[in-house]
Image (cartoon, rainbow, N blue to C red; front, top):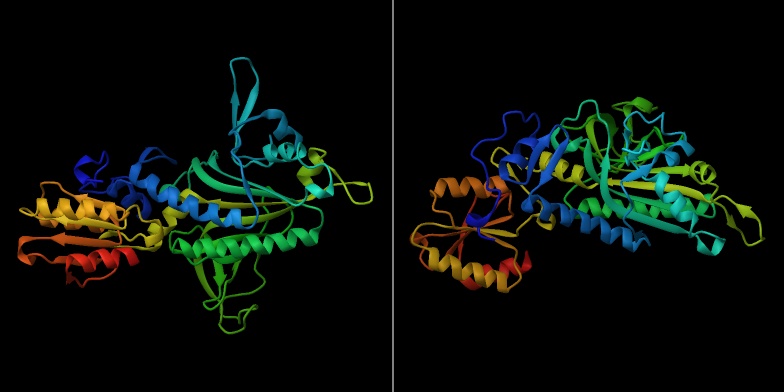
Length: 410
């Protein structure tokens, strides 16, 4: 992509109403645009990042046996009445059609996936079953804030599993937990596994995946050495005590942002919808149900909060919209176009800042965008190319072939 052709170019200044780092930088760099509080448009740049986050978690969900579906966001009222959630879930959007019928906008999909699974599950041979989707959710937040960390419209990966026994659910939960940890690592985050209440979903303890960040909304105690973490509101341990899991470190207090969760839903929803299966003895039984959420858009915001500096965003290589940005200074347009075309021929994701602008403006835009590597072509450097990693201050001069080799490794 040539920057001169981009519909959404980096802005000189951040939005005046931005109160968080992710809101400020994502809008200024051209990844999102705010329509209203809690609702954002994702630009081509932002969509490239979001697609890479989607594909990372999609790969892991497929590995554990999840099957991808796409469920409606518009739900009939009766499904929510059946579970008792029509009046009890305060963030649920209620809609009325011109015919007088009432609907809900999906803030979660238990009310849709359970009757869907009822059509599939007939006997124990149909279990376990895991269905997941990557879809938009709607929540009537009173104070939509923190950029894309808390929205009224946001995207999630939500998976729902059905099991013959509690033991099989526990086995699957551990597989999903491990998959989550791998996927968070792949997108450049370290997540702590945190005990929390089940909230509106269940009376059982749930598990949240928390990333340490000052922009977080939860007070937690965590271990610096292992994944142990606990929400301070239900904690039996305190700051300064030895970690109950590894025992190697003392617990620290911090702020965390939830990027994923898992709930043991037990048999609530399957009983509500009368979903039963026939076991090996010919008896009708209710399966055990679990759900597993991952905030894809929220993850994008958390990454910006965690991996930015005073110059802009620093994307991890795995989810950056482009692997490299070419900055061509005046007089080097022909050489830059040759490099640009060669990189594309080598399947390198490349952005070329071909605008007629000052070097300082181009360098600032490259830093703001957060692309992992910057290549500068200038008359001063002759036939060599200046390479600079976004995370480093130092630069180095490389010949053409060395640049191609390094990018293939990147």
